[in-house]
Length: 253
Length: 340
Image (cartoon, rainbow over all chains, first blue to last red):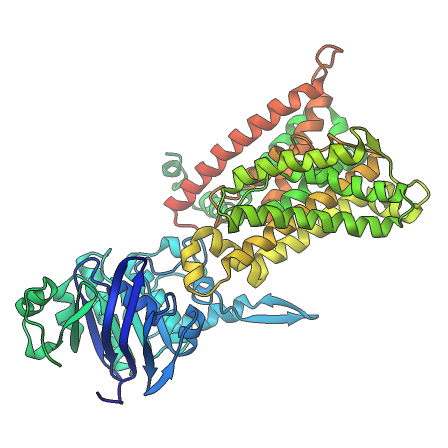
């Protein structure tokens, strides 16, 4: 297979007790590519992403970035390698201010007589910078708590956090699940934005319309195995749907 | 409901917005109302001496409550603080009786308190037993240690250690007891700790959304551990200050105090569900409790059968419920006006 892939996961197997969540899964994302990861509930999408994010460790298989082998033992490891995961619940803390959320676990500190205190001013300024130029605007101050934001705006905060810390791959778990039509569209624009900035994305969603409107390629998981890998412009929703349901023929690729 | 009427006057409206945007506005309002009410009934209430009595009371509760605020911010409780309160002075004085230097005794007492906090952490967080249950258990357990070490009686601080007595006990600076300075210093440190350090940011993140904090790489267990230890050490410190000042520690000292402390934290505006906390609110709430305690004594008739201090607990109960209603109402108004 191509060694040009930004991220390559090869032969990934993961079991939870007697349950085989993933079996010999190959998955890759190229530079500046948006890949849709689809499959029915329990197909193993989230498990695959969590392995990439360093939350779970694979029993078997390897992860490569730009052709060299990497291994993630914690979410921090994955993030240091430029892989940012934006979870379904967005990993935001409701009562924390926007900029405190953006810098959570990576706070900027300033030393006063050897005592390290948070540099709120700097973090707020940097947050404004990170949010600028994204297709969703956040009204008001970055000092307001996340609680006051809409679903799309939250998505934007989560994305801004990842951009600021130089993520190269954005793994988004159900980015549109809880959103209305207009907000979903905004988030899809946001994903295209990321591609235009040279980033790559993995998008997990049940909504095939969303997948078809943004993804360059679609990988289908069924019962822990890859059952299809389609270039979006060469396939149809019916074909992908059949694959999700396990009706499609196993493709050779 | 009341917001409609307020829209007519924009100046009043702006003033209200400014007041509401201060998180502690509810509790400050309560302090003002009570001060006016008690003073109008008995002018002794605003004399310097009486204020010092109130602040000394506030210090005893407030030193522990400052730590408890962080702990509750990270969504954990500690009901064992009352038993740990007595433990530090018991250890320090007992060792002094055995001719161990009092400062070594103080340090050892603090270390034991820290270990109590560590034990609470281990059972509550590592063994995943609800901290309410865990510390309910250790509250009884640590009390037994108090009883055994004192043989059910009292221990006296070493009266020849003048420096020790001054620092922890009877010292005055411009007429203000050292206990008050301890409390102010600890409140200041805890305000910074919660509001301006990584640990504080993580504390609120852990309390607000533990999965998010974990996913972003916060060591959530360690954050809770630090808060359990902090709370226990401050409980011990408060005990050491109070008992040295009052001249003895009895095995039952501090019993029932845990609920006053949790009450102070809740009254101050810290969420019982974690994620939102204010050390400043807790400090003001501690003053409020002192005002209720001593205020009731000064204004209520006292008889031998029913001394006025009996009404204190009723007063605390009223304040806890009343402040919760007030804070909730203010939060609703804030939400309507989108004031964070």
